Length: 174
Image (cartoon, rainbow, N blue to C red; front, top):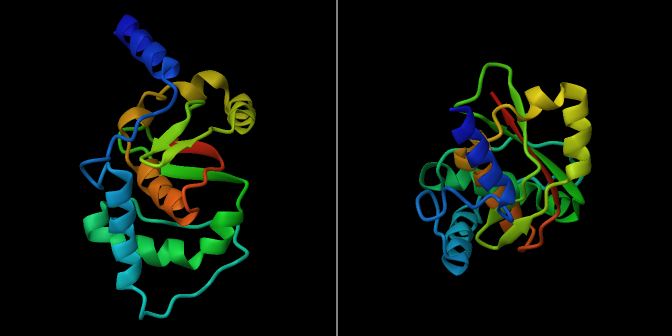
C-alpha cells in the first residue's frame, strides 16, 4: 500500500496540474460548450433581482452538479463578479467527501479548468502546512485528484473572471 501510494503521489506531483475530474461528466469539457452552458444559467436569472457585492471577503457556494445547482451558482457568482474579477488570490475551501473528520488537506499542485490553469499559491500552502504540520497537511493529498467540490466552484470563478486565472490555495476539509 505504501509503495502504491508513493507512486500515485509521485505521478500526481509530476503532472503540470490537477486535471479536471468532472469535465465531460458534470459539465462540458469543451471550453466553448462550457462557456455557453454557464452563460445559459446566467441568462436564466437575468430577470431576477441579484445583489451586487463589490467588497467581499468570503463566499459560500454550492458544489452540486450544474444540472441541479446551475441557477444557484449563477446567482452566487454574478453577485460577486466585480470582487472575483479583482481578486489577486483566492482560497477555496471544499468538502472532502472521503476525508477524515476534521482533516485539512493541502496540495501544492496547480488546478486546471477547461480554460486553463490556476497556479497554486505555494507560499500560502507552505505557511499553512507549517502551521498544521506537513505530515497532517498533506496526508490525504491524493483526495484532491477526484474530489469535485473545489473544481466545481473553480470553473465558475474562471468563467466569471473571463478566463483569467489568479493565485489559488485549494484546501479540502474533511
